[in-house]
Image (tube, rainbow over all chains, first blue to last red; front, side, top):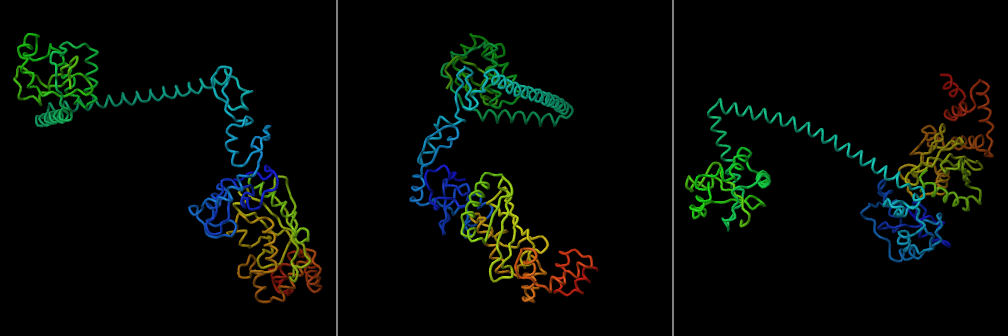
Length: 315
Length: 199
């Protein structure tokens, strides 16, 4: 929609007036054949109702509209207008093409964002600054945040409820599966088979790791370290039925006879190189899974595998 | 009212006021309220037509969405014309409907309505009865239109015969406007008009 004609100094030529809004052309476009010019907003609105030129009714579509010739743009940009904020005291008289940049910084703009200097740190429109009350505004802010917090808490409670329901259902399903496994031998075989395959699939998805310093092995990791490794295993997709067993096997008290003490470990050092190790993603630890290491001597291996945590030296 | 509509109407009002048609007395425009949404137009019957010498008032209502939609205009003065309803004053004119264009103004619309009085379109009628008479008996149509112009729009041509016939029906206790519509519809034959009114 165009500029109010009264804002301009002197007479404005009829050619620079939008036939739709009867204001001075703003961001004008013209029809392709007849070259009648309109404000972009005005002609877009009109064409959305009727695809014709509003002056001579020639067919026009929105995509056919084009920018007006340079001479028309120049004539428009040379017009002198008062500022939008003239009613608020701005006396500036500007060329139309510099109006936009002036408006950005016009200090008479009643909506100019101003930081509150009383210390609350909020940025407020200038015309609201006089009425501004830091305590009230901050209270309102707290109130909205409190509201959001309450919403989140409620959502959390609802989610907990859903999770509990899922847990119950899961427990029931597990119980059911266990019963099936016990009562039906072929089912047991099938389930075992599925579990084994799952472990193999997971093992294949992990990348190979090379241990450069076997001496860096931590044979008695503490609970924090174990928890960290367990989380990483879980994130890598470790089948849940072996994760606890695996984590048990990260401590020398559960390691096989060939690894169970410093002495046996030293004796069997040369056998380490036979291990096929998999990387625990992102951690200085390796998995020595039974399914990857069927070639290793029995006294060096346990089911379902070993977790070996290192201080350093994993590639 | 939307800013753009008020702005346009203000400007168009000035345009009409400055126009030579107003200076020559052939059209007039008046504001009805302060919000620029209702106006009253006035057009003079064009010369060499049965409407010559008459003054016709028009009701103009400007919608919120003006100028993207046309103004709503109807005749407040009764008129006998194929494209104007003799009952409601509704006008059948393409530019007030699907041929409206945003660059048209109150001035151009008033002039178009005036032009419609000089050049009726009996094939696109608003009033089928009038249009039929226009096509079948143009002489009688012209007389009837002159008579209506005389009675309702202050036209100079008095047709005594028609006045007398209307008076006959009024004496029977019939409303004057109803009597005139009935007689105009039935070729000014008193018997057919009364038969229609009393059936």
